Length: 358
Image (cartoon, rainbow, N blue to C red; front, side, top):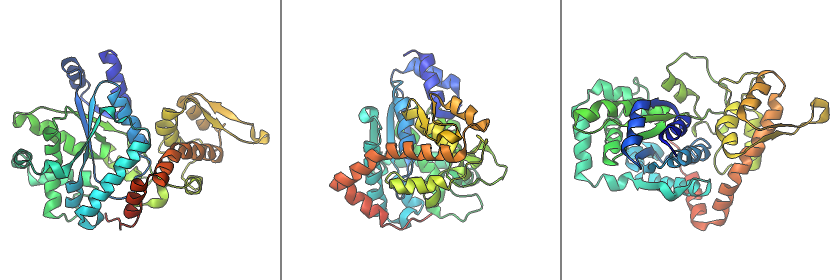
């Protein structure tokens, strides 16, 4: 695979790449660059965190990039996830890894690293301190967005420390690329600014699209990162999220009542699931409908489906029914894993019993 092909694949994952030239130079200088993502274990995992994350990582590693997944348990502790109970957070982390094992993530080039192990390093905390010394409180407060917090929120001292930790993660893991969601953009840009000041490197920032929740979006005008946060699928709104062990009945029910305005392709969650999930895993998407409504349709590309929908040739209810079918097909292996693997089943039952805290 040549460098231009690699860049094209990374740009398929990244809604934004900062910068393409830095990425090109990285591929020119390293055969196996390192990318990382960190995740707070905070409850059951949804479609965007599960299937879509696996799709993106598989694309990234196909270019020769090695991927490090940080189980950010101490970060979740600092952010008061699951009531600030570190033991519960770590159980949720183990559960999330079980999901990825069963949803098609190619793990040969993926390494899972626990924050709990990193924090035993004096060098890690030294990097945290150096980043903190180079940053103003105001700048760190603006990074509160990465935790799902607003600048106006009252934060604990631990939450103020969090962005410095996340920035330090990049350098401690020797990550050339930060490959996180658009909601994490601010701290990744901080890393690009502070890295050279500390005699370190400037990581390439690849910010992936965040899958929408199923509800109707508000009309608020915000910047790209804020809008992504507002629209994203969230476990705190369980009826607008598809979870990785949802039953077929749950999937059908949630999608049936989802926001899907006729002919509208922008900010339409059902259209998004076709684009970012279904056509990434299936070569075609079949729409079954009675002859009196035009008979069955079959699309071999997302663009064809989008055009048909925007012209009104495909009704939202028919698209929803097909979407529910394909999403269920993708989740079936995960459900089976948690039904047949006793360790995975025990982890899931424990996590289901945890009270989710913001």
